[in-house]
Length: 274
Image (tube, rainbow, N blue to C red; front, side, top):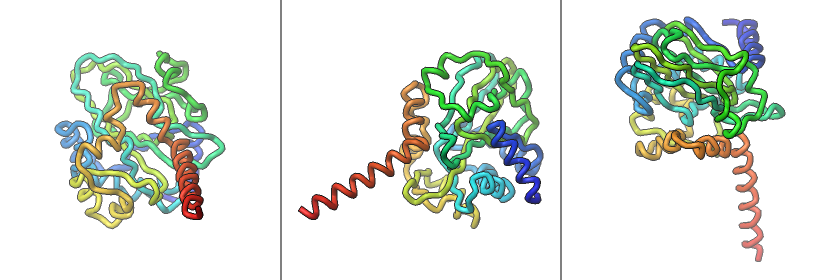
């Protein structure tokens, strides 16, 4: 892929808030992921070799690096989850954003959604609202949303990868089919030693099988599953407090934490001088 191709994808990404890549992941890898995705829900999917190969895919990581405008990219664990719907009726809805983003600041995080099987209209496809990444939404606002003019359904073939702004409004459509549907959610961010994160030991070993995987997890710590789940947000998943928590510790929260750390360091220096 040449620079002109990357620039075209970057323009589409910034304009719409997302892009969908087709045919980027090798069919053999898609088949391996699909087999694992039907057996491993939640965070455990990231301990499987096939998914480790997905997150450390060189071609995709190159695009992520181009979008984030840095070579220092890290896997972000804050969205690790295999959303596995086993079929049968389920309501749609649940519009939300996964993080905040301010238009006057550089983008530091990217959200990915991978579909290891075909997704039809009846299988509860992900819904997105193009252009919504430019607005700041609060949980009380998103909780009241239903059908939105301009929303798009990601009806895709197996192996499709959606790359999104974390601030893009998205939701699930109603699942009316008996077919199971997996959506593997994960992310990348600008690497920063101040914001390390936790992985299970098995996930850490999985990612670090390759040189690229080691580079993408250089600041990760291996912890037990409870810490890893907490760090991926999902311990809070069933409440609006969860949504508030995500906004609080997103991009804006990171700047606040940096400010508080500077204030704390300043106070400590003053105490030492006394």
